[in-house]
Image (cartoon, rainbow, N blue to C red; front, side, top):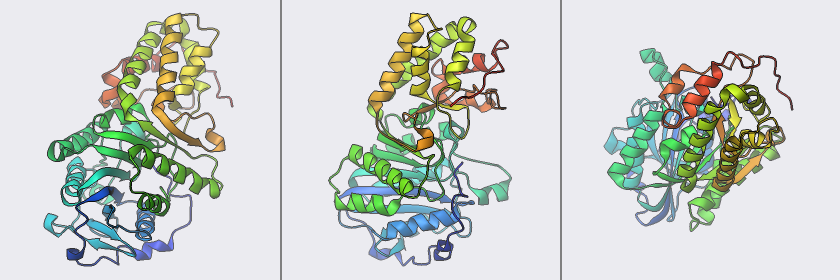
Length: 405
């Protein structure tokens, strides 16, 4: 999901890609330092925010060092491939059949977009932003026009996300320096695992993203102003600009983090070991695990809990005497701390550490495992699915534990 109700309807709807010009003048810079691509799926109730975000990009525009390329699909118009210039966006997709209606929930569309950007707008470094509703491991990028035409509530699943970035890499040989998720609830190992090997850094949020999304004008201005920055620096810029934007507006529940994918294998191994220990000792420590999950920071979906917070609670739980659990929890905590190099939180999310994980623990109707979690590779390729499945179905789990501050 994405919070589309945060602000009133934007007057920017009227600006819906009216400034598109013929394509010939904007071929991009062959020796650019960055190509910054935005997969802008606004074919839904986020349309007005998508138009606004494009307008923000246009206040900066591309230059000799930075290409801003957008695939934009709205609810009211066909999708178009756009090269963002100062003050306008130029349609550049004629060779690929644009403008045309596409299903932004189709991973092939995402793969082709990445390939076009790398082939037609080559650069030293690449950033990809995925823009739309997000549901963490449950998927991203819903397309309402396709839903109305087919009746299928489609999205890009975790498996399809992997297919798209892997397919693009096979074609281009290019690894993304940064992948940003301008979507709710995406800061999870279940998500990060799907883009391992194909991105150096990730920027995402454990919590919902307000309707206005990333502050693209600030981010673009910073990137154009210092195009020599590397992927880590750009990731931190996105996080800092995002936090500053919403802090100035008085938001209390935003959180944003940046993760170094060099730690993804370590994180996978650590969570695998912790899940195995919790599964082995579930009969003994069922209620301790339940309590430690409930005491961790939770998010819009209460079954998303802060991973480091949960691990720290396990480590500090005096009722847990088994040292193997403590050791595994300590490793998870350390790896998250090592991998997350930027984490900025609002007052309501002060216990966030940059990475959430699925663990249905609360007693408010969300404590049963979701059927489709079995389709999440991170879960099934580690011990985490077996632990969560056993935990959520354990009849001995307390049902009177309440969430406390």
